Image (cartoon, rainbow, N blue to C red; front, top):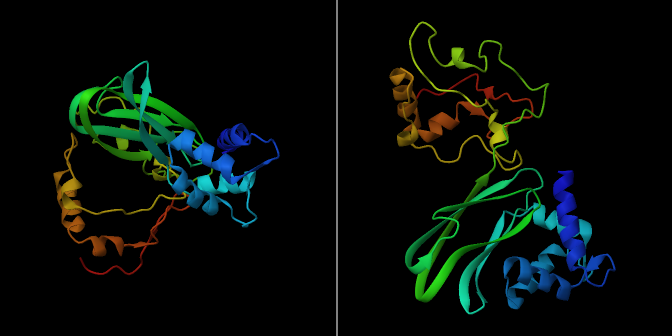
Length: 261
């Protein structure tokens, strides 16, 4: 978190060209234009959102709070250098807690090349801004950009006092019968669900769909069938748990009285 705030502080100071410790609307407009390619007409609205106390300027703490309470942002624009056209994409990771992985897929393309591949993945650290060239263009060209993002899993235990189930060890003994010959490969690490992303935005359920339950190498078709059947009734599945958000101690409270599926 401290490193992310430092990056955002440095971004603020870079565009606080007057050096007075606050950002005027003109300075904010330049920042939004250069970092995200936001046109001047829209920049005024963004400035007003960031100006929390409505005093006509944006203070450092307002700037950081405004960025870290908004989803990750990106903006594409066509750049021209030495007569050659490229597509530049600017990224801002507004989270102060976790990195973000952007996946960019270009479709319906003609007369373009992909210096970073297609699709391209870009990792942006907490509080970081980044600009990348993702397309080279030749006239006449066309393309359409599709962007998705997800939190970057760290896989690092961040709370030694979090709940640990002594009957479910973090090794293959918990997922396969030791008397059976089954090669699961090498497991890189085990992680808690909250370590898959930003705990502030993570929820237990997003969309529940039966076809997302798939059997791998483990002989547990009976369990997969049961889970698939339960997933066909999303509301029943959700009602089994008291609460929808991840808890700080790693536990989920099971409802003492569960409706019949």
